[in-house]
Amino acid sequence: MTLQEEHIISTLIGLVGACETNPKTSNTDTLIIKALVFPFMEYKTLDEKTLLSQEIINEIYIEKNKISPNCAQCSSPCGNTSDYDMQRIYKAKEPIRKLKLQLLSELQNLALHLYQHPNQMTTSESEILFLYKALSFLGCDREEEAFIQILEEANHLRKELALF
Image (cartoon, rainbow, N blue to C red; front, side, top):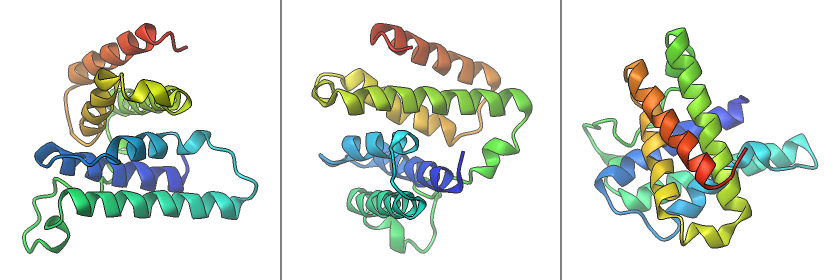
């Protein structure tokens, strides 16, 4: 995973944290899907990729501030909307690290499917909710069994949507 991709995922987990206690906007789902498919997008130059990643990160911060406007100026932040430290994944014990990275891959594939079939976004509420739930899972330290269960849920969604 590139540093740009890590930064996008880091900010995305903070956005999902904001949505846990505040209502999302009409743009939130689309933005989350766009951010998750960033690694699959094609670029003419490395500069174009860098600019797009920064644009996505800025959009995530703007969206997070719309959803939870007081968090940016909070004098005693709780951490719920903070960017996630991606090193927590890489420094996790081997089974947890592998499961988290596998879950992230599943999320990106699900998001790619929804991105390629935008008409399904309005009828796929369970898939959209799963994206939020799984991103939230990535930001937490949980037992191996919890990650196995959410991966089973991802596998079930993949089969329902006939994804590879």
